[in-house]
Image (cartoon, rainbow, N blue to C red; front, side, top):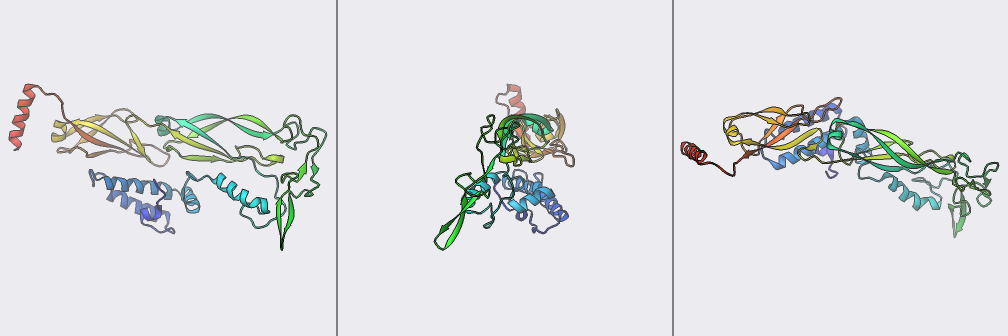
Amino acid sequence: MAEDDFYSILGVSKSATQDEIKKAYRSLAAKHHPDRNPGDKSSEERLKQINEAYEVLGDPEKRANYDRWGTADFQGIDMDGFGDLFGSLFRGFGFDDFGFGRRGRAGPPPGQTLRVTIEASFDEAFFGTEKEIRYNRRTTCEECSGSGAAPGTSPSTCPTCRGRGQVVRSMGFMSVAQTCPTCSGQGQTIGSPCPKCKGTGLRKDAQELKIPVPAGVEDGQAVRIRGAGSAGPRGGPHGDLIVVYSVEPHHIFVRRGLHVYMEHEIPFSVAVLGGEIEVPTMRGNSMVKVSSGTESGAVLRMKGKGVHTDSRKGDQLVRVKIAVPKKTTKQQREYLKDFESVFT
C-alpha cells in the first residue's frame, strides 16, 4: 500500500501505548469485518489497511523503525544510495556523512552493502523454510592482510596529505578541505602493490549462507544481515547484506498478511437450503458450513486456516460464487419451473 499514516488509519496518536493500539485495531477490525459488510469493496480495502497498519504498529520493533524512517522494513528506501548521495556531495569538501567539517578519520571505511534476492514458492512463504544462498563478496586479502602492499613491504604515509586523506585549499576568504588527489583519501600510498590483490587489499570470495524464510513473509519484504557484505579497504569492517524475498503467486489462494483469500463455487441448492461444503486449504481440504439463503459474493471465514506464526494464526476467507449450470436436462428444467412457480 502507499505510505499512509498508520497511526491515522488506526485512529491513535503517536504516543499511544501498545495496549491502546491493540484495542483500536480490534474495534476497527470488528467494524469492517466481511461478515458485517458482505460485498462492500470499500470496507474490504479499509480492513486491509487496518491489518497492514497493525502489522507494523503492533510490533514494537517494526513500530520503532516506522517512527524513525517512515517504514517498518526499509522497503522502498535505498538507505545505502541515500548515504552515498549525500556522502558524494559533501565528503569531497571535508564533510563526513551528515557531519560538519570534521577533519581526521575515525578509521577505515566499511565495505559495500550487497543485495540478493531469495525466490520462494507460495507454500514455502506460507509454512516457512530455510534457503541456502550463494553470492560473491570481497574479503580481506590473506597475502597482504588487507594492507595492499606486497609481502615484506608496507604502505607509506601519503606525502601530500601526511596521512590525513584530505588537503586544504584556499578559496578566497575561506578554506575548504578536499579529498587528497594523491592517495584518493586513503592517507597512504603503496610503492609495491600486493601481486595477489593488485594493491586493493581485497579479494573476491564466494559465500554461502543459510537464510530462514519465516512463515508469513510477504513478497518484497527484506531483511538486513549485519556484516555479511564486502570487507572495507585497509582492514575496514564488512558492510551488510540485504536479502529481499520474492514470493511466487498461487493459482488459487491470495495472501494478505496472515489471512488467505479464495473464491469457491457452491451449488444453488446449498445456497438456498444451507449445508456443508468441502473447501481446499493450504493444509488440505476442510468442511465449512454454509447458512441457508447465502448470496453470491458472501464471505465465509475459516478460523485458523491462514498463516501460523509463533504468536498468531491467520484465517482463510472464502468468497462464494453460486454455480449456475450451463446445460440442463428436460427434467431439470421442469423442476426449476415448479420451483419458480412456488416462489413467485
